[in-house]
Length: 325
Image (spheres, one colour):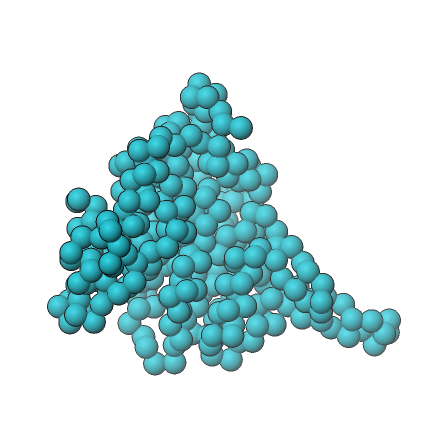
């Protein structure tokens, strides 16, 4: 049942203080990266997993760890390596000689927030085990199904410049991630502030501000947020325009794109727009909210053609052109 506008405004105002406090708490340890932090919060509220791509030293891991410490939920970090096994992620059955029975030993995937560090360093079998858990929100061990804790958010990182000894995620598995965030170098001013903050002797104490129950309540609020038909239609039209050969696809898409985004992209565009509206204290999203989340939702779902790559055209370039139409 949808809330009316007055009720929705009251509920958003109720939670606004928590979100503002969370933002301030995380910024005690982070300098810059404001768009990334907002999108991490959007992923948390939308119950959508996020892939972070960036060069070493750009605070990918620190950002996720800081966010986890500011939330009163369980957190685990999995360092992906070439010798990692699915059981190291999911867990396994252990035989107890005294009792003569098998017991379940749950793996690090059983946490509210899971940091999958350098996910592209493990082979396909391990990646598939993690991504199945992301989609199904459950794990089967020894013929018994175990439900993962709720909320459940996977934040994966990968380094785009190292190719040796890595196993790039297939496009079908990339589609499991709501956002793909690309981190760039900080500005001069931000880097000065980073060096000052990290080379001194001061330390920052973190206090948890949200617990699991409050996060689940916020996620329900997102689902019940009303959306105007024109916003939904714009989301579906934008996704449809990425599909080469489709009736809505412009000529440059048919020339520069091999495969476009699927329906999951339309769903995440609308969910992301809802979350952004709530973070900014508004009871319903508009087209601007949709456009703000379009790039991280679509960039890993739009595959450019060989001709486009030869000309240096990336998926980001194609999406930016579509947003202008």
